[in-house]
Length: 150
Image (cartoon, rainbow, N blue to C red; front, side, top):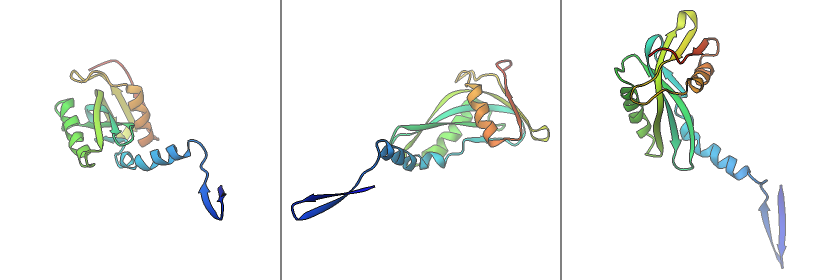
């Protein structure tokens, strides 16, 4: 909606923006960096360690959580180191923080993923959050979690 304000002989065309729209637009624009970071990146099959990471766009204080899990990682910290290198490629604007870990069993033939356990270094991830992210990436899978096991 445009409003024309008249001051003497001059007029000014002003755009009225509903309250809150500016912030939503700014957040949508600024989170494009976060959109470039995949929510889930895990190995295609097997049993392996995983971590849950909060990635923050420091420019406007917007963040999201991501799941990473790789059989090649001997330790949960190895995964975080690898992700940290990827995050650094975003001009220092993104910051990663590991909020916990565990293990994943991924059985693609059975369309099954099981999340369980904990990380000795980072503590137990919120497996429920991890499962919700995994379900988005693997909607046809049976994705479950348990606090049992290591």
